[in-house]
Image (cartoon, rainbow, N blue to C red):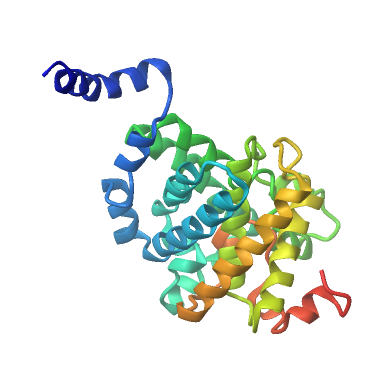
Length: 286
């Protein structure tokens, strides 16, 4: 009897202790899985983002498991990383289902487009706090773009005002960069899932080259400078992402894709995206 009573007391006190100590237990993470009301709203208001998030979760969970990171934390965080897109879903390519939706950004300035796209991070943090998501989830929302450049809108602004004072900093996310390995995993998974939809990837080798390029671009841009991610771990993750993405590409239907509009940085116009991975990487590979 004492044992049963102790279990019930611990069960009742656990949420209180989590709040007092600022810790997030495995129990709490499982509690806020895909059946949370916030995710039901995401599915209803931004269905493309919802299914994108499920795919990101699968990619991130497998990569985390491969290197011994916290796979449950990154899996659940991936569900929520883009909840801020619910505010203006049709400005993100994965939710652009009509011709009118696809013209959204052509009707406003690149600067305004940049503000709308970047703002989904701020809105996501506000929603997470409003719904009292665990504190451990918030850094993933804040860091999943780091200080990535919204290159498409930056290039468009430069074209409109080639002699102006526009700088890259005007079109970068404010950060912070990923502070943990798990946060870096989510950043990579997010960019890979979105960008792969605009690529005609055929076979495992092309997928691997694509994954390497995505990781290399983030590395060169300094997005992993503030976490303890090693090159060995990046290599292991490359193979994990390749396997998972290969499986996904066999069963999914592509939605309209512009990586900048969809995930917030580093993309090109859809018509500029190469059809073959070789044309992106050059004959020498990644």
